[in-house]
Image (tube, rainbow, N blue to C red):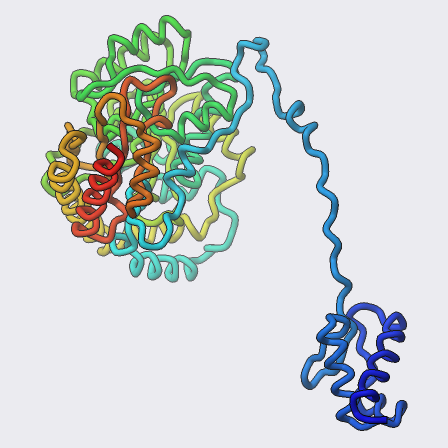
Length: 482
């Protein structure tokens, strides 16, 4: 018998005997097979190689030959259509009440990672070159060595960290104390906690128009109804705010008084006072999202204090996060409230997530207490201003018909009013093909938008040159779309 027929014969015999072995079980050694079938080692090796090529065995050098795992058969797809009924639940007031719905489209658009070669002008996190990566690493290492660093923290947060936030928000001589602060896992978590605690399902929540898409998503997921209140260059229209409270019976108004997302507006001094007066008259809370306080630019004027600093009666529930100015993964924020509202916020926080991991809180304390912290804030202020100026100048050159009407002195984005009739979604798609990712304006409105817009961010660009190049590519896309 020649080698070819011997190999084929042995392979056939071994194939017929494979059922003796369980998947993953080791077959007899090559030496055992040589002795049993009285063939050469070469014949055994070739026969096993033939079975391996068929996927019947697996040879592991130095370990032996094993029966291959049985191939998995694709399971028939299940029928999940029943969930459409189970997930569609009417609110407590019947079919006209707000149903449960979760639409994260607007949020996911800002979190999506653009393809390679595309300039990211959608996100709200700092480019790695602006993040305090070395100070963060050092802070985390020091935090891990702190006594009790891995113990369970108080559910409200570490007292020292709460006291730091209280000083930052209320001022060193203000009336806020650690007892007024609750540590949360980032600003979005704080916002979710606030709306769940303060707004009943089916109720109306007033929001600026346009506004941050994340608050619209949270409100709808909680079964509450976001009602838009128009803005102008000085912030929310307080005359319309009073009318909206009266018309809806809302007990919550969400706002971003400083470098508002997406317009970049700063609430004027007169309207700051009016917002609080209107809310107090309505017996309502003002949820103040102070997300951009540490994102002021170098040449900007002094920043107004938070609304919470002028509010001894607990009208304002204040949100302050460190994520935007540090890293997407430093998810540490604070909720500030007074009276029974704080107790309800605390209860919601405990039910939802227990507490923020202690090592993260300890690392935050190490970071904000280090000499690197003020240096980092100055670096961010300068870096954002350079990118803003470069992008704004390039937009005036390459897209003059939609150049920003307002250049904010803080934050990380510009709000572009497009010519009437522009297909903003189509322009955003064309821009992506041209190599720049921008955000259409529609997701920033709780109701029909008054005009087409784009939001362009410069925080995630590598520098001024890339910010300008992103604007140039956007202009190229706009000209090509006409």
